[in-house]
Amino acid sequence: MSTRRASHAGTWYVGSGSELNDQLSNWLHAVKKSIPARAVISPHAGYSYCGASAAYAYKQIDAEKIKRVFILGPSHHVYLPGCALSSVEKYETPLYSMTIDQSIYAELRETNHFTSMTKEVDEDEHSIEMQLPYVAKAMESCRDKFTIVPVLVGGLNRDAEQLYGGIFSKYLKDPDNFFVISSDFCHWGKRFRYTYHDKTKGEIYRSIEDLDRMGMNHIEELDPSKFHHYLQEYRNTICGRHPIGVLLNAVESIHKEQQKNVFKFKFLDYRQSNQCTRSGDSSVSYAAGALEAV
Image (cartoon, rainbow, N blue to C red; front, top):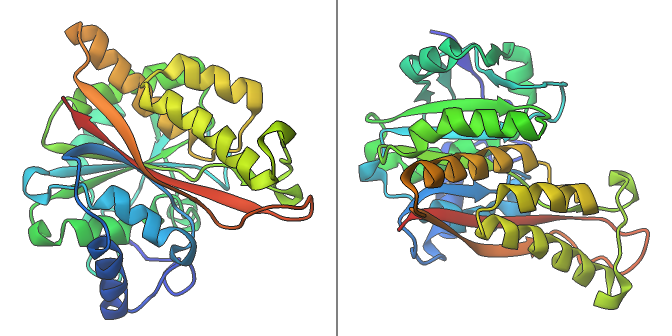
């Protein structure tokens, strides 16, 4: 059985299973459970930067109710106009390995809107892998009773986000399924080629937070159109903007079908890797939030 190795273990996060388990346990223990989530947005940087923030998302999982975990992560290294599925059968983590749901993969492939990524591309990409140890930890009480559905999301246009949102809405409606949307927020600084600064907000880091929270407000409104126009206007470097767009469109599709709002979203944590005050500074923002049924 082909397996994707934990290629970023030992660099982006602790490679020892026992040490990683303790680290994740401590972060999760520090967070209160407040929302019975059906989906979360979680950051995907090195755990030393965003591990404590991601705990706010993963604390909201009710493992006993979940049979499948969909993980939608952006493609950082290869150009991809659509979405791609893994070519392996298992994903390894330092905690334990998780099995990909091949029956769901078969359904997705039948739509003719999914390609396959090579094992090399799969292992190079960190956006999905950085969610895996937290998925494994949050689901450890049911470790042999669930599968995962990793999906690499490319540079989708507005129509494609609607298309994939419609495809995934079928699965989001099913309470057996849980969605993880992998995204960091603003990447600020010359090395990211993004130095937006609204000086009316004060220091650079305050301008960054204001910019991020504008986008976060549109996500909490579950409005894909507003989020899309916000990105067009400000070009905020939210690397998971397309997976987020897919989620928002999936929710909108469900709301239109049922002619009422059945979900709501709330952000639970926000932080920055560094408080930028000078043009030579840089930072990445991290946010964690959860979608719940109402």
